[in-house]
Image 1 (cartoon, one colour):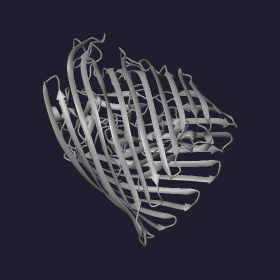
Image 2 (cartoon, one colour):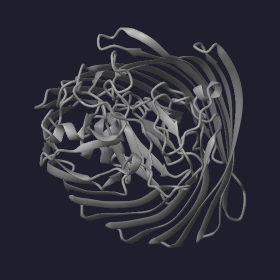
Image 3 (cartoon, helix red, strand yellow):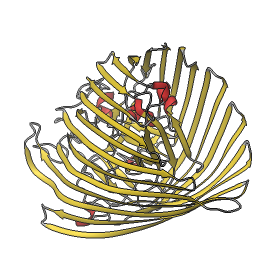
Image 4 (cartoon, helix red, strand yellow):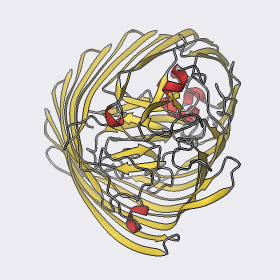
Length: 639
């Protein structure tokens, strides 16, 4: 365990009444999630001063399988969480920073792992329906036999969302089937199948000046509507065996993926006659295998040897074309076929020579083999890249109520496939209309943290950590080129603190605050988009049965933007209340209860949406609106 490690239980998730899995990520202290599209499009994540765009700096694992797509037409590390149904999340394990050996590609800011299952409290299942006054309907069915392990269940979800503004309609569905079988010799066999589909609109961003001048509503869209689809099927077979002294786990998995998106973030700035609308498409698949071993050593003190290995192959086809407002293609920007093989090995040694010290040193080796073919330029190339990542996590349980932590680790982010055939470097001050692909080299980071966990009483826990990260090359999402740009190196310094207090069984509170100073190393300029301050306050009142209520205040501080711009922060208040009966639950949830106008995503770039506007490359502040006041009712029947 490291200073930034945290675990969120299924019970905590259920109390928060999330309507999608991205909302469960906001239970992880220091994480902020932004949706600059509609239900179905990947999210923008912020963690420890990183704007992880669509997943470029936060590794997300589902039962050990990375959901980050190593090369994606819309953004390196693209992350789609809509195939995970919140009701069957048994645990979320988050590790901030790259300090543990199992953390792999994109874990520069940290890793988040989802473990699926249905607790005994929710068996044999539930039927849930949720309706909002803005036209959102969500239905979930979970079937989980009482005489089976937590990992055995079937769940399905269907969502229709009219959207809180124009061009935000979405339809999506997901299915998860999981089975665990226990053998007589202590072996566990498990199987997982997930399937998801989504069709959604994309409103794009608004120029703040147009809203201030009254030309368009705060929650409006310029149109014509952008559209997208996102489909995925994932299957996994695994085996675990614990013989007392040795714990062995193995798995094989496969994935099929299809994605397309049509949107326009710049109007007709680049192409005055036909416009800047782009249609991006990606299809492909992945196969992989993993093995992990933990062997307890016979010593005078507690110790264990850990080792792991894995292989993954991703095959993708990417295409991007310029289209007019009617959807007719008139120019092809990208036509790429690529194969990416990733092999990793790690080993570590966990030992506790004294009661006041636990040491977890490890080292990880990652090898990437790229084979890319640019059909437009009729050019092919292959490349191999290696990353060696030493890591160590130290904990000092100096007292039964006080534990200190000290961690160091090296993280990495592999290049996208396009960089192999088209090399182009950018700097932090460059205005980009067409991105050439970035550096074909692995970008590494070195991170360190010091922390403490203090439990003066069973009813209270206080955690604090100071962290520092030095990134070799930064990645920022650019809405002009519609992809990630690699920039100069950066450094981040920060402090995060949280306190949990549960004085009685029916009352719990949590407060958290994170400060981060993220800057480019060469110029000292702030890293765009990443907020300096993040804070949250949560309150829950209620017992296992009977009335309950809760609230959450989320505060995002001022955010620096590209080219020296800056936008103010915002706050949001969410409320919920309900009554849990033996077989029924009725909840009323009010999101953004005070109805504040929230600029959830904020950006600084040039655009032209009004034909009467003067054509200019001077950047302007743009934003994507957050959800206004929304009331929803959630009805649950427990089978």
